[in-house]
Image (cartoon, rainbow, N blue to C red; front, top):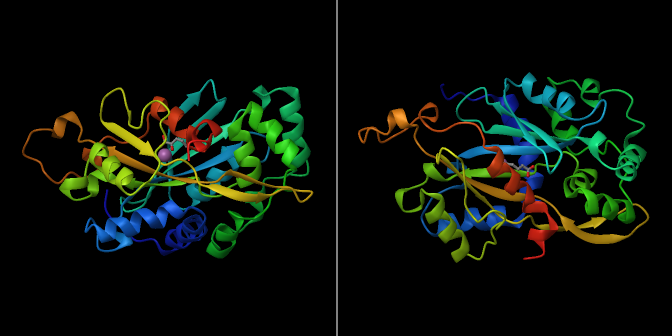
Length: 302
Ligand code: OOG
Ligand code: NI
C-alpha cells in the first residue's frame, strides 16, 4: 500500500490529537526527550502505529455507530477480538494508506453486566433514541472533530462512577471519558537502531521516569512472537462530576508497539521492511493487559 495524504482525515485526526496531547503530559514528555536524546528531530517523525477508542454496546451507540466515521474516511474493518473476563468485543480497522494509523475499537457487552450497572448506564443513555453519528454530516470535518468531544449523555455522579468502576473499570472510563482518544501508539521499529526494539525503548522510557503498565509484565508478546507492546499507566485527570464532586480518575495513556518482519521476509537480506512485510493486526492476550493501563490496579502505582 502506498503513502497518500488525505487532508480531511488529517483534520479529524488532528482534532483528536490536540486535546489528547494536552490531557496526557507523557505525550509531550516522551517526544521532548526523544528530541533531546537525538532519537528524532521533530515530533512529526514519530510513526503512529494505531489509535484506540472505547464504546458502550447499547442501541444507537457502540461500534456499529462509531465505526461509521472511520469507514467514511476509508478505513476497512478487519479482525474481531473477544475479551471474556472484561466483557468486551473489539475490531481493528486498516487505514486507507500506510501513513495513517490503524484503529482499535472496543465495545462493552453491557447486557452482560449486573442489573445495577445496566441501570446506571441506561439512566445516562436512555435519551439517545437515534444514532448520534447519523445526525452529523460526515463530510464536514469540523462537525466530526467536534463530535468526539460532544457530551452525548449527562456527566455521571461520583457515586454512579464508583459503582460502575467496582464492576467494570472500562464502563466507568467510558461513562466519563466518552470518545476521547484512549491512546496513540509509537511505532518503535521505525526508530533508529539504538531504540528500535521494545526492550531498548522501554529502557529509555524508564530512564526518563515514565511509569509502564506492569499487568502481564511490561512487555506483552503475541503467540507468534512478532507483535510486542508496552504502555504507560494512564494519567490521572481531575474530573468534575454531576453534583459538583471532584475526584482524580484515569484519563488516557500512550502505547508502544514493535512489529517484527514476517517469517517470509526474515531472509537476512531485506533491511527496510514495508508495513505489509511486518506483523499486522492485534493480539487479544496483549490487548487484554493493555486495557488495564487505565485500571486502578495500575494507576495506584503512579
Ligand atoms: C485498548 C487496549 C488494547 C492494543 O493495542 O491491543 C490495545 C484500550 O485500552 O481501550 O490498545
Ligand atoms: Ni493499542
